[in-house]
Length: 413
Image 1 (tube, rainbow, N blue to C red):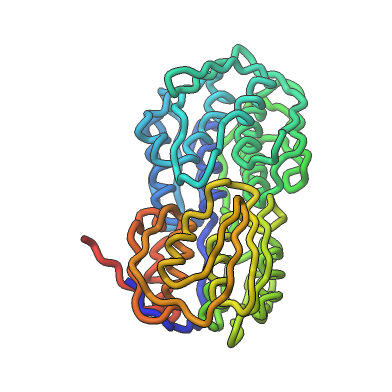
Image 2 (image 1 turned 90 degrees about the vertical axis):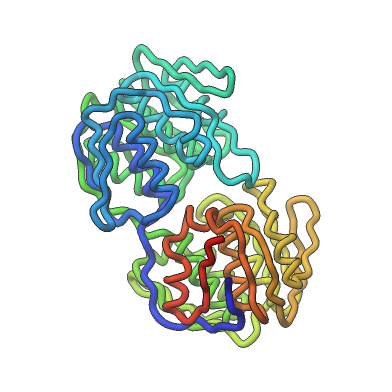
């Protein structure tokens, strides 16, 4: 339950990145022994990945913000279907299981229903390394006698496929080159962790990644990068509420696309080595946004940006190029009085002077965040249902925003 018309002010620290932590936790499978991952957020998706690793025989335990994974005695290479259905990123254990044990069995993964995210690019890359893949009855079985380095050209710069191939290729004989690789900061962080384990990988952050196979790895300690999507959500929250927020523990370079659009919309942006300060204007101005792979505008900030544009002066256009089903928040924003027209993968948003609080429901993680932001800026009160989606990606969201001046109460029915 959100009381509207609040102006956010103050300083807030961003957690470690969820989307970096998940593949790094999966990559711990590659090296027998205890690896320590530092600054891992307390999120449902992280808990699910811990459950996946535990189901394989790993020992997973948390000490404050840090997680230790002991993969010495992994005894299974099969992930239960129930666990796979809880989170899409469960598929990230496929590459490291094949890399270390030469076999794996997973079901088709679940997660937010925001569009088609097939495994074909993951499997194409693994086949190029010499992995035999069988798909039947909703399961993917992978087996390899030996892994051999290969030249792999991705049809699309998929983050998950890039990460899975990197992890499998660490133990492949010779050299593997991934072309048209994803350039996201989370891929760079995975490369850094793998290299701490003893891998030889270069090129992450560019569209060509080179992996020189090694015979053995060792455990490591690694600090996860800050969560650029959580940081971006705070930045949009400051702008939509006309607030003044200083967001610390960020890497400003990861947020350039969003900063450009917020500045264009009238917000004042100030950056330092590890912080971004955002001051919202009295009235936002409409802008056009097109989601793109990094370093373009992130699809994970598209719903939050749409919430902002509902209150901007003029007409803004959002074009979603990553996921074909990522406009489910449109109908809920309309319930709050937003004027949005959808034509295919394009949303046309005619800004209004105010939104009205209403009962709405989160259909997925980032849509839920968008509704929370809209609720803080709207007149009257808003009730957001489906907060289990929000908990997958934002730690203690109501407590962190309340510390900045929001009035959010969690109600357990």
